[in-house]
Each structure stands twice: as C-alpha cells, then as structure tokens.
Length: 99
Image 1 (cartoon, helix red, strand yellow):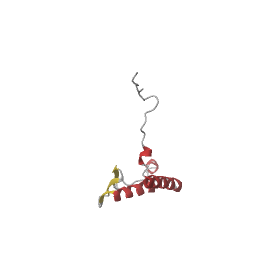
Image 2 (cartoon, one colour):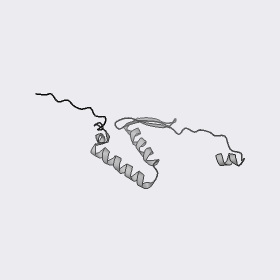
Image 3 (cartoon, helix red, strand yellow):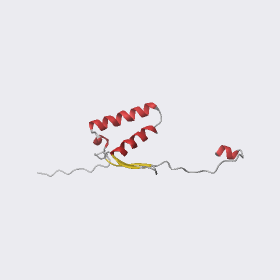
Image 4 (cartoon, one colour):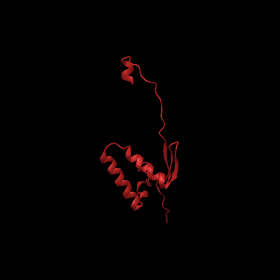
C-alpha cells in the first residue's frame, strides 16, 4: 500500500478483520473466541497448540516445536521449563546458624 500510494495510485481503505482470540489459562486449558464459536478447556488447548504450530515459519521449526511439546506432554515435564533458582547476582546468601 505504501508503494502504491507513493506512486500516486488509488488504494482501498484499510479494513481490519479480527480472526479471533486464543489464550492459555492454565495447565492444559485454553479459551478460544472466533466470534461464531467459543470454546474452553482441554479441547481449546489442543486447538491453541495447533494454531501456534501452524503460524511458525518453516517445516523444520514446526516439526521441532511439535515434537518438543509432544515429548513434554507425554512425559509430563512441564516443570522443566520453569526457572526456580535465582541468578548468581540476584541470589541472597543463606545464613547458616552458628553452633
């Protein structure tokens, strides 16, 4: 559109089309609102995952993420993505009681 306008060509006015909303809301739970259909729960979570894999660029990235998520799902390793220890600079020293 920018190139067309710089060349002086007529362009159609911009129209925004909302395709819907997807959001995860917990462990294996999501909500979906496409306007004409609204879903929530585990089924919506699967659709959310498929949508995110679909919008990745390249077959290699899609396959890598899909296999990684499948491995985490089947092994129930969700906690492996959590950071539970502070960094060396941000950690507070533990005081040990003297005897």
